Figure: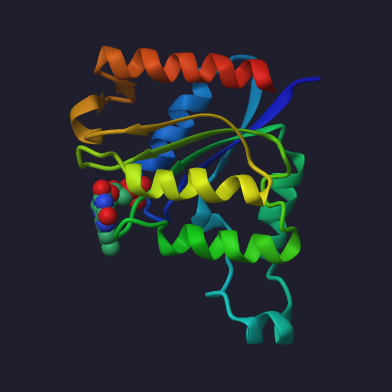
Length: 177
Ligand SMILES: Cc1cc2nc3c(=O)[nH]c(=O)nc-3n(C[C@H](O)[C@H](O)[C@H](O)COP(=O)(O)O)c2cc1C
């Protein structure tokens, strides 16, 4: 049966470069179904234990959780806001963890980050690399993608070294599905 890969950009920006990078990376893998998550499509309040106790889980959250259940693997690219996850991503992550602490269900994950800066979100990527395994992540490969606007144009990677590294990671990820 055809595998399902869920791509997630860790941002709620309509023009998220992380969403672009995650979806581009997904497109490198052939004969899979890509489910492209835009965090804006899954409504949930700012996490509050009181809201959880009083109202339970939002429909948007349940929908996102169901998509995670159906995934065979994840390609996630994290936005870096002040060195950590964007609020939108952290919020979704916190809510998801209330439904199932193994948020990533032990499924293969390709974990990326990008930013306009030279470190390409390395700081948030390191945080996730340290933390996601405790939340059920099976991280097959990871890579910060630096200086996004210099290295990615017209939906393609213009820097051949970065392109080769990402292609290699995609091949390894595909094998792990
Ligand atoms: C509040 C805020 C904090 C940011 N902090 C960082 C940072 O710590 N490191 C970084 O490389 N870029 C930082 N940036 C720039 C983001 O990398 C840039 O906005 C990028 O487009 C975010 O990814 P996205 O397009 O997927 O949302 C910050 C942007 C905002 C709005």
